[in-house]
Length: 72
Image (tube, rainbow, N blue to C red; front, side, top):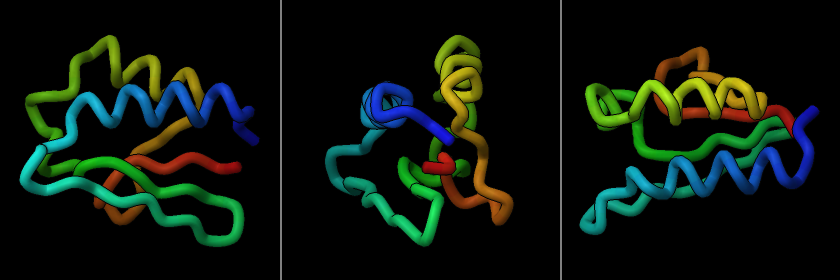
C-alpha cells in the first residue's frame, strides 16, 4: 500500500505530462487509484527517470493499458 507521499509524488510526476486542452481525471475504485494521461498519450514522452520513479513509488501501468495506477 502506498503512503500519502508516494501518491502525491506520483501525481506530481504525472501532472507534468498533462495536455492543457485535455486534462486527465482521477478515478478511485476500492483500493486502487487510476490517474494520468493515457499510456498511449504518454508513449515517447514519459522519461525513463520519471517512469522508474513512478514504479519505485508503487505506481504501475494499468492492466488494461489505459493509465497509471496505484494501490492505496
